[in-house]
Image (cartoon, rainbow, N blue to C red; front, side, top):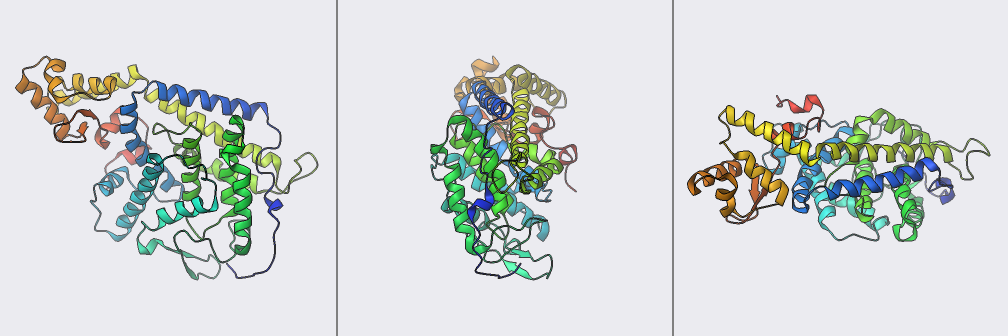
Length: 403
């Protein structure tokens, strides 16, 4: 890091902003993502989608942490959401980091769509909301050369030059100019539908290229991509691109580096940066999105999902951990979104007392939940059930209980 001030860098250094000429591959990926996202949403009851959203936020947080090299166990994330923090300082800090990510994504998910989501103000807001929730010890970064500690100020652009691998991002005095060009290029209201989808992929790289903050750029960029997908109607609480990026993190970084490269000749576009490098990154990013939508579509196929829930209930009943006919109530919640408590007798074909026993046990085990003590119940997704209902949602090492 250094304080070399006064060199004006033209924003053209960041061109091209979107692949200059659409390719069949990118257009087809954009259309495929649109079609499969809508199909996925169409097969799940809206109330169930909302419940799954809580699970997907935790999963998204887990994989976003993993990209940063922070392997926070899903059970520690679950405990953090219940405000049950570890007594170990390092583990507690990672739990607070995870909780911060989930809270910011929840704000995005539950807020009206923001047409200015690619503005400097919104990008700084994401950084501020995330960083203000972090413990003090996570608000410092270190110069890799001098080992000097630098304080991260939530929501404020960096004030020094930095080096990220082999890439030297814009100088601090030029950041606002680059972010203004970023907003101009990626403002969704100015783009046709297919170009909006390409813009999500291209903007993901270009924001990392600008590297506006001392730290937290990866988190902010992935949160921004999430918000952008939501804005154009492709994001939902049913899938997460971060899972795909984390599971192919080597290729993710390789494609980012490729899009950092300078133009290699007359056949590589007309901008300063490689047009082919940007196309390759966009293809990788959109393919990853499609793959994750397909993956969640296979898990949430109604027939297959209910089959796994039924097998889970049968196993738990044999072990004496669930009462018989638990599946009938869980199936009803899946199909109808929610049901009134008084219908438990009808659904289970039990006496009122027996039906209440089954219902209360499912609520106790957090397989069903309710917004009020006497209100209708709906599906919930505690981690013990998630590991059976959503196989391979997390890597195998994350399914074991933490030591």
